[in-house]
Image (tube, rainbow, N blue to C red; front, side):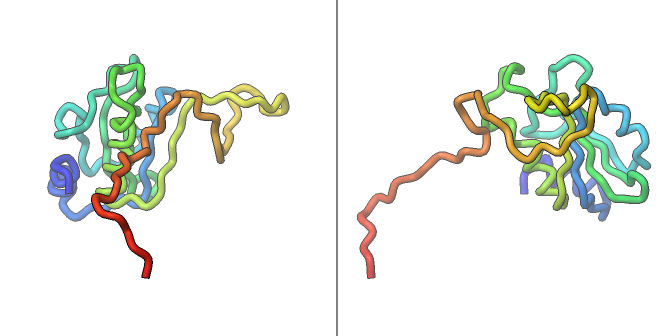
Length: 150
């Protein structure tokens, strides 16, 4: 368990969130509706990158939203904040580590579908990665000895 997850679990005192929410700046206020169990600034969580984007609070809130146990991240980390791509996966992995088995991510997104009006809620099932890297890509290892078949 990472030090950040251990600190969160200790402070949560037995509370386990089922759903992780990662809120873009447009929905940051949703976290205000959570019946608070505990809250953490990213700067207080070891190994978690600091959020520097304007209007991103950089805070993790645990509690109940409409009776459902949630862990809510009030922002996400972006490549333009000077982190390496692998750091982008730290927050979603942290949510999984503290017990979340569902993830809902909100953000401003565009669509090539002219029937999709501005401001509409959409479910994104895929995307075009133009970054040239993938934050979920793990380093590959090569076997040190030949592998023989049975």
